[in-house]
Image (cartoon, rainbow, N blue to C red; front, side, top):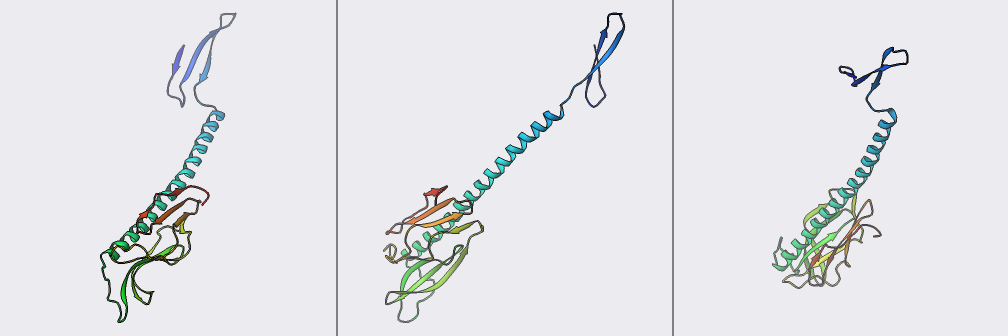
Length: 194
């Protein structure tokens, strides 16, 4: 038996002898058949497709968590500014500082406002505007505002009903709830049925 090297596949050459004592050689090439290659490629494609689908869902969940944290940070900023009675701009004559509000303008935009009050109605002075970075995330709850009253008085009773629900295009949701005392919680995450 001898091995011939230098071809695409190694070839094993076997010496055979027949009944008349004639010696001749038989070649066996080592390699993969077409069916074996197709099976392996098919398995690789199935695994790749599943991992890409999972990666897309994972990416949207991380974007959802990032946007929820961003809204929670803006809510916390409004609460801290209201607690400290930080006046961004002076209120017009006849109005008093009423706190800070986070106004939900649309499914992807919200803003931080300073409120000046005259007889219970809030006159908003825009401090900053915000918009989601991803088009795949939207605010599911209704538009409205959450008003944090000055000097740790909590949120105004007529503020937007809790919770604020964010939703991804794949159906994942996350709630941001605010207690009457102004505590902000982003722990509720739902993957389906929101």
